[in-house]
Length: 145
Ligand SMILES: [Zn+2]
Image 1 (tube, rainbow, N blue to C red):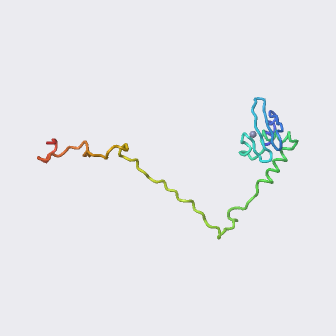
Image 2 (cartoon, protein in one colour):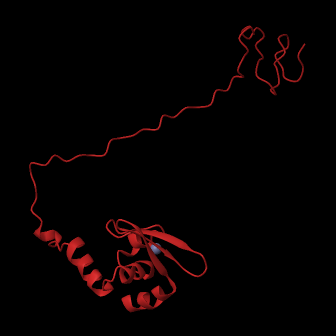
Image 3 (cartoon, rainbow, N blue to C red):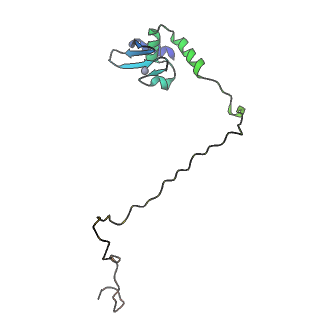
């Protein structure tokens, strides 16, 4: 897997920028900055892979190091084996922190039209629309007077 990256690294040229920083370029004009100590490449693949890949391999060669050795040191320094879950010791004194309850307030949009400041309160109240009004005299539907 690493050898694939070693092959690919051939198209990259690393140059030392200063400190632990390097810059890799290829013939297409692509350019990435690499910080060896913080294991960061500006293409962000290093953080994703966690392993040296073509950009990094190129830099390691320029740094006159062996990428295989570098991988070993990555593993020995960053990955600590832990026991399975059944081996974990429970911690009775540790308070359980529950996630805080977050309620979204429900607000209905206002129905009434917003009035201007100098506009008076509703004086004429419309009665229900679109319904037949009952005639006051005859108490039948269909006409208003
Ligand atoms: Zn990169």
